[in-house]
Amino acid sequence: METRVAIIGIIVENSDSVEKLNSLLHEYGKYIIGRMGIPYRQRKINVISIAIDGPQDIISALSGKIGKLDGISAKTAFSNVYTTYDES
Picture 1 (cartoon, rainbow, N blue to C red):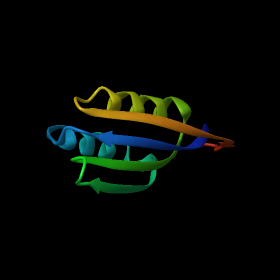
Picture 2: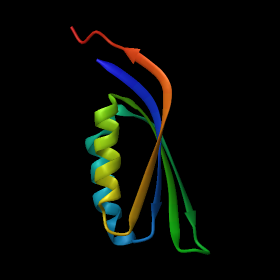
Picture 3: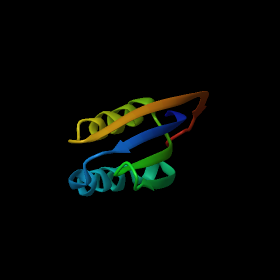
């Protein structure tokens, strides 16, 4: 299995979608390296960054699912470093 390290940047504008977001992050938890959330109270939004290490299709799937949530946007930046793991 070939994996990449990436950062998913998330902007939460609708707090009603946070429960669904957290559920998705829990579902993909085995790939998540770390998470940082910053409430921006003046703008009534939250800024979240997710560091993740996994197969590119898994990372893209998570980012796509997050981006489909109401009032939440996500963008992904991939590293150029590939790592191959033997799953046997």
